[in-house]
Amino acid sequence: MLKFKPFIVLAAILFAVTLLIPTMLVLPFMEEKAGGKLGEELKNDAKDAAAVPSADSAVEVAVYRTALSKTEKLPLDEYLIGVVAAEMPAEFELEALKAQALSARTYYVKQMMSPNKVGVPAGAQLNDTTIHQVFKNKEELKKQWGVDYKWKIKKIAEAVKATDGQVLTFDGAPIDATFFSTSNGFTENSEEYWANAFPYLRSVESPWDLKSPKFRSETVMTVAAFESKLGVKLPNSATIGKVISRTAGNRVGKIDIGGKVLTGKEVREKLDLRSSDFSWVIKGQNVIITTEGFGHGVGMSQYGANGMATEGKTYKDIVTHYYKGVEISSADSLMTKVTARK
Image 1 (cartoon, rainbow, N blue to C red):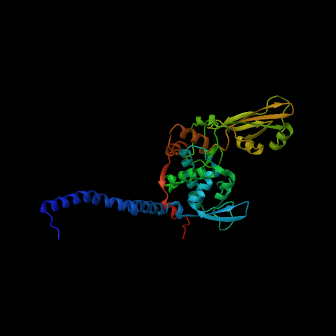
Image 2: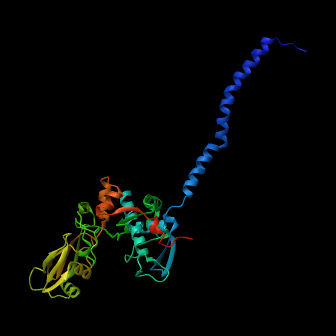
Image 3: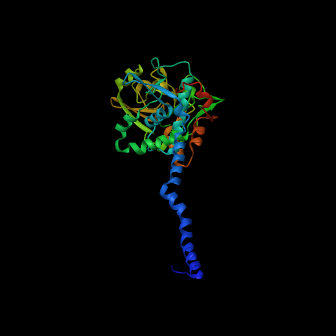
């Protein structure tokens, strides 16, 4: 049997310990990395966070698809994505899209709380046209957007999620969150275009709209068509009528055409014009009509909202500019009055 000297044994033990200690220190971290425990925990946390339902997803919408003559049911968040996508260009600034999402949700909640359901069959809450809000589902958007579908739907979904469960209220009640494309530089008082005066739908400046590609347009029609559509007879002169009054938003309030007084709204609708801010001239047998703005002019201007967002304004800045005296409120208490998903 070999005999080892004590100091040699001691030296060997110390050498072994010196080699083992770093390994022992590193081993737990190596095992954690190899086993993926930390990564798995983070992954699970993210999954749990994603699994938390949004306020919008808890509400079911029944939208009547007019072209298909059937009712489609889907969660409110998916409905809002389809509305924002159909009503506002995805290329717009994110804050403008958030403002649109907030307006669209408010419109829905207001509609659901109204006893009058116009333009829908039994079982439907609203339809997919301008009578309510234009809506397109994801399959329709895929066909429309093609290769741009992924980034556009992601951006719009982000805008809807950022405003989850929020509505615009005045004195605690959801507002009529009306919107339109482009103003003539000013929005309109609600009673100048519709029957009711709402304190939050007041005329405000909207200078950003002047840069809108839809700000000015031209319509040409024959004198005969002009007379027929308005039920007037033009005098033998170069002038066509006299503007009697203008609205707070500088649109035509009333106009006298050959002795017949019409409102600017009536002229716009009868001639299918983009705006009730119009002027015209006769050239030969044609009437050339120039309009400024696009839409009824009441509420939020979409191009104005995008202009504000481009300047760094938030969606809260946008909605409080176009809807006077409103608050952004939680829809929780209001949503209980809306049909919830089972």
